[in-house]
Image (cartoon, rainbow, N blue to C red; front, side, top):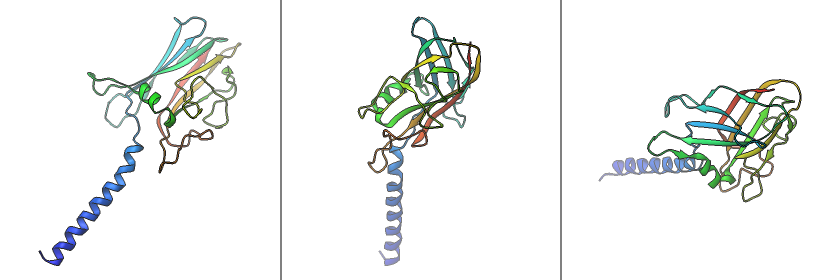
Length: 204
């Protein structure tokens, strides 16, 4: 084998090795595959009273993203617990509960919210997407004591009719070079969104 051929082979092996190295970190940052998200607002005083809002991916593995189906209509002066049903149903015979995966990797995920000012008596304000310091009533924490958001509490405003918007954003925050991204001060800008959904909101 001549020297020129050896040089070509060496260069090809080097490129392949570098390519593999470049691809390896990407697997750690892979976003969840999600085909549907359902928000469930359960009336704390009447657990049979559940308000739902859904977003669906219309083309599975195609280029379209999750699309909101309708709005959220809540009763005034009412306490709700918000939970999520998050699914990957690309394979109808093996539907994956992404909520369980989020729970298993809760130190790498956090839900963030924004909403029209005045829509809720608790939390007040406009949420914690912008500004990041806004209050949210989280019911769950990861092992590091940081909020997750699979369950949150909401009390709607007591008087009048409110029409606005409600945004739920799931942020994927895996470590980078073994350094945690999700911390007590991380925001909705850290990591990458698994979804960012905005619904029309009516409270009356």
